[in-house]
Length: 322
Image (cartoon, rainbow, N blue to C red; front, top):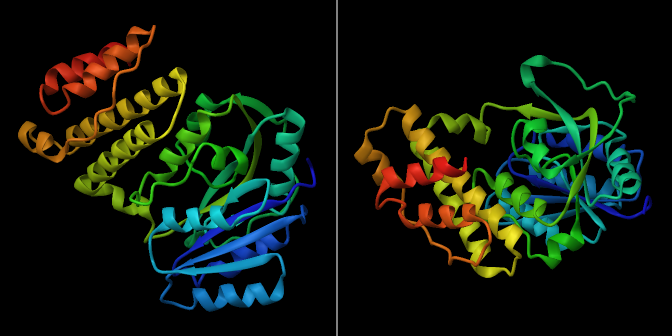
């Protein structure tokens, strides 16, 4: 298990100022059995050439060039090309500590899990520092999938080891239509098929904050509401197109509830009026009710049924299962 191939997927789009230090941190990994897949997503700067230059320097590096289609499509291309037992994502403007891959592989091996993740640290260009590539001694933990969001203060797919067999068997890919919140979708679906996660407490992933990042757009309320609407639809599409058991069905219902709660929260925070709020919440594909012994599932179904029809009742129904 410890010598299994790890495919590291890096979506690249106009990151000529960062791609070199990113790839440098990956080729320097102490775990050498890696496949590095650089997916050039139609870059218009020097990024594509820099990727090709790296491929000539290290035989473990492969470059995929495609028309600009967004980060979700770029990661999906990487997954399809990958031949490793494990899949890992790194953003092209980020940096990883030299022993991260080894730590992640050791965690899944020693804890018997099908997923492991590490801690991370945020930084920006103005910080003007280089990560200290030193080995830290911290105790690793076995956590539940429910704890991921709290530990990482959100859903992020980078710095995580995923089992490619689970991805392929359960048709788990990023939703191409999502330009934001794509990590929430991917990680939520994957978590339904595993029980526990190996957590490395070391801050081994350095996440760069840039002025042009997606997070900078989140101040645009309508853009953010549109993102939650698309995520809501994506969960519905997965429910409609994939066979899942009752527990997984309940989990996706809960995530759809999470989307609607955030839709209302965005409207409230922006002080939008009732009529405008309803107008921004588009209709979505309603899923069929499954037989369930849990009343919670029935309540969630009813809440989805009255979405945009009787908003007050919808809110009351959701409040019963929060």
